[in-house]
Image (cartoon, rainbow, N blue to C red; front, side, top):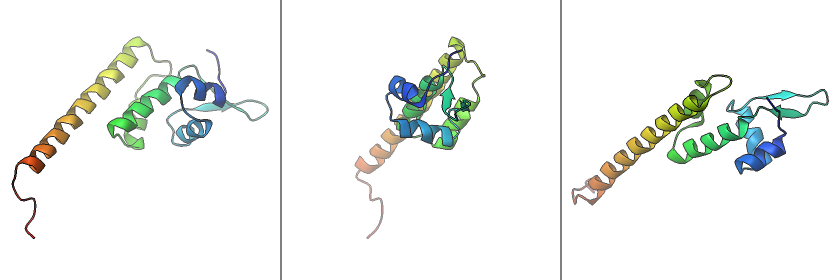
Length: 115
């Protein structure tokens, strides 16, 4: 398994280096340190960051995202990523249904409050 610098993970995942450090501080990705105290990330770090960004856009909290990523094995395989994909898809669809229901309430013509 290769290791990657902050900059390499940032480029691969499409975020800034500061975002990589944020994700590390939040426990979404892990780094080891070299003898010169530089961060090195595993080969799946960029994928984890991309998953985290999509999960954030769905509306998941950092805590919820941490839980999803923590459920992955140390070296996730295709089936593991597929299962995570299905969880995120299901959660996005659930939240869309909730938003549509809220929009229906707003558009219903019923008063939401008495003024």
